[in-house]
Image (tube, rainbow, N blue to C red):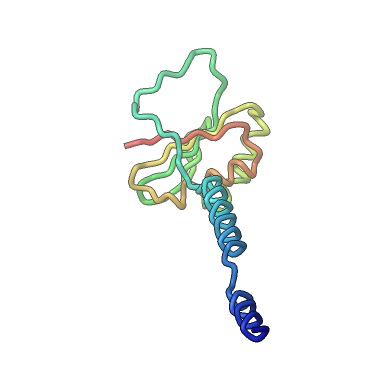
Length: 140
């Protein structure tokens, strides 16, 4: 009889208890659900106004205007008129104009056919020139 009791005890000892493994799986599932809910995707979403007839107040400060044509040519509007500039010279032109108008807002007038990369390059150059505000105005 003593042999029989040992076998019965031995059979129970060979079974695997799955409860701790299930606990770990459920904890991992909760962790991934909570982590996934806090992940935010970033993207470029400019706040583009719908109207094209903008009224400028009479007492408004003069602004720095950069125009992007449909063929991705960049023009800087100055007192004397417009001047075509290279993409690499946009920052220096904005810095020069900001020396004259330190609180001026940089207004980027971009054509609808202009590439987004050109707009981003001009906006980055304006931010690198420490412009207080950079505004996109669609022109068509």
